[in-house]
Amino acid sequence: MRTLCASTLIGEFFVIGFAGLVAMKSDDLSVGTIWTVCGIAMLLSVLLCGLITRPGGVQLGWALQIALVASGFVVPAMFVLGLIFAALWGASVHFGRQIDEAKARWAEQTSAEADAA
Image (cartoon, rainbow, N blue to C red):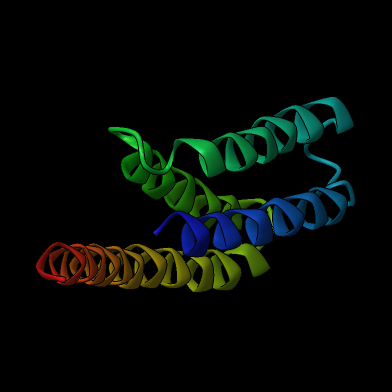
């Protein structure tokens, strides 16, 4: 699960950065505000790469997905990109767990075969 989720989060890191560049065209927000919010979101996306397997890591990832979709109120394209990344996050969590379970079964089977030999 960790690899798939981390890949999604790193992709989000770049998308958040590019969204910050687009948001700078807005006259409603200061550059400092934009980069403070984007910087925190980018930092969170990188930190979550290491926290995915910890308790609450996946939930924090969902919170980031919600924030990414909500950023569409500032940069309208982020509604679409946020939904795409939320779908990728959901798929990463789902299929990552399936892969982890398959790896555990394989390790158990290999261990049982080694014990029998």
